[in-house]
Image 1 (cartoon, one colour):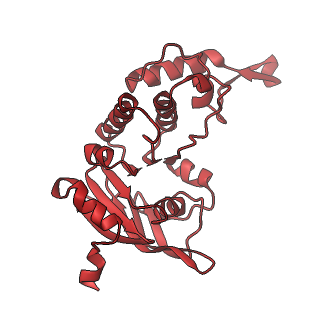
Image 2 (image 1 turned 90 degrees about the vertical axis):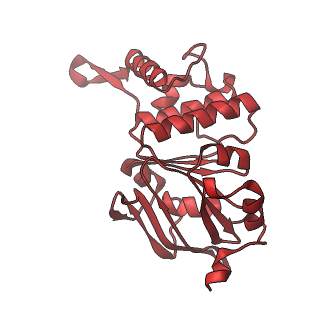
Length: 254
């Protein structure tokens, strides 16, 4: 099986600091890969190089078998790579359908196409069908986003990505600052993405969440990938040792 995403020898520098140093990463269809590391390990910088936020100084990215270069995040989204950050980029004063269609609203034309208005009925109907398919439930889709819980907001962000045919999803700390029940809901959504053959990179400091849903774990330390292990073949204690630099597989092969 060929990887759906392949990053090869990515290097990103900020002045004299090398934030990502020769990192390679493969992700296969329907796979959930945990990307972990301490603060300033380079995790977020790596995914920003993949998703078009940053341009790496060295390295290549392949997506669906083709070499790609994303000058902007919108280019990555058009290709089918959606990144869901902690701030979610949701509009708090708008309701659920308006956020799912934010920037890509459905409109209907009047007077021979001279006048266009938002087709709120269609957006509501499409949102309702999408959320039911994902088994996501809200008291009302007319609720404003800022009235929803953290877990419900994550669900809206994931649903939006799925509606726009995301072929690959990157999630940056999706369970951060959520209660236990809401963490479980987000993890269940990740499992549903996997069941639909949508691969996910999960960045998280919460190792129980990582072990609950991932197939493999990649650990970064000070900008380098220090190990990559099947989740079933490791444990939290070992991963923490890699995260703090006590273990490093690259030393053994250097």
